[in-house]
Amino acid sequence: MDCESIVYGCIKDSIIGEGQSERIQINRGAMLTLPRAEDWPFLCQEMFSIPDPIAQPGNYQTDVMHFGASYRAVEYEWNQWIEQFEGLLSRMYWVSATVHLETELSGTHTFTWECKRNFHVPGSGDMFVQCQWSHEDYLRA
Image (tube, rainbow, N blue to C red; front, side, top):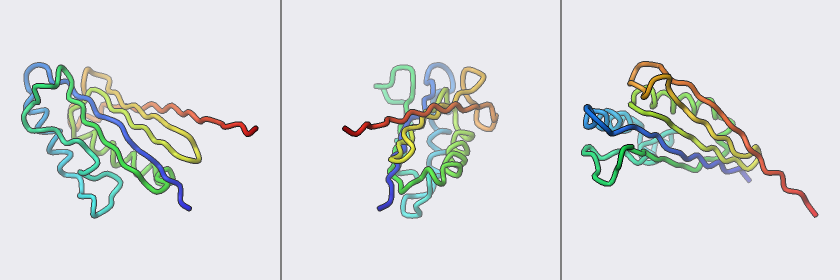
């Protein structure tokens, strides 16, 4: 039986001030360039909450774009997943991004992307990632 991996998280962007509509449009466009699920890529449009082109009145200061998917042992191809995710981030405006990888064999990993400025500008390359790992060890009685 194959091991299941769950990947989920969110990308956050500020929606305060000038350029709010343009930022939402650019982020939306970046996500819409992702392939559809039937092609079964690591990242697809259907796994993301693609922002509405018009800012939602329910959002206070932050646009939260969440995502999630179930994979068959994606940790064995995790470098490729990360590469595609960072490719998406490179085309977007964002303040931070968080990815949780839950695996049956190697525990839970949390990856957090941040930029050196207040927010990431598409194409700037101004991002760095941190990883935290946790694993619960069950004792048998």
